[in-house]
Image (spheres, one colour):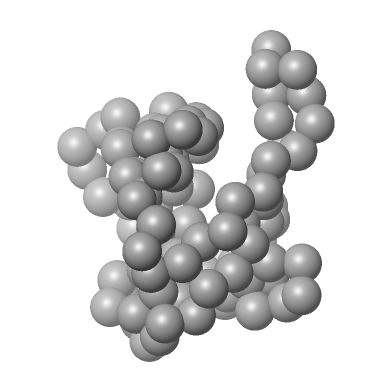
Length: 110
């Protein structure tokens, strides 16, 4: 499990594969100077509920991966996550859809 840290105060674990996709989407939005909410459901061990953070270009973000290999990116999942990030509700981790086509997505989107 990888870890996403926000402003040295919020830390949450995500699967390395999901975290890699979130990193691309968040990085793309920030390169465009687009601020947005990022929300997730908290684990029951942490009390349950939901957390939302305001992602902006001056926020301190850390993506720490457990494994050393970068996973192959699913373009269809990137599109679904970007669609969510561009919605009024902001970015939420949606389940990984089946990949359309077998091509790899580039990390440098946008």
